[in-house]
Image (cartoon, rainbow, N blue to C red; front, side, top):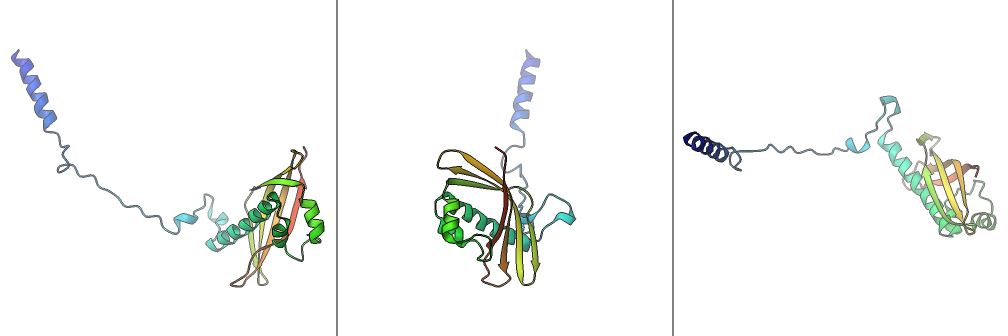
Length: 171
């Protein structure tokens, strides 16, 4: 009986004497700040790294492509037409509108790494894309290819789509 009381007392003393009070245990808290460089890290080697400036240009170009296909999916051909460069093969507005009117919804995906080229006072961004358009008859049409956008290297320069080089996928 005495050994049992001894073990019980020892376990009570050892449990009660653990350093679990807030005053006795201090957990070191580390502050980790995300730096601007962390926001633009890439997962590949140094030769594949892209500058922040190029990433900004690609983001701007992707926004234009999303706006373009969004306008087509919302049956707003004028908005889509105006995002294309006047020197592109967009044709007249009535031709363009007729070609694009069959879609009720369009989803676009960027399928591969984009490229940025700056020369002659212009930026050129090439975006590999795949888009699927749902027709008013309920069928879908998918296309793959690339969108090429250009922007003058000026403070107020805006991207326009200079070329959509896409091919219909086999059904």
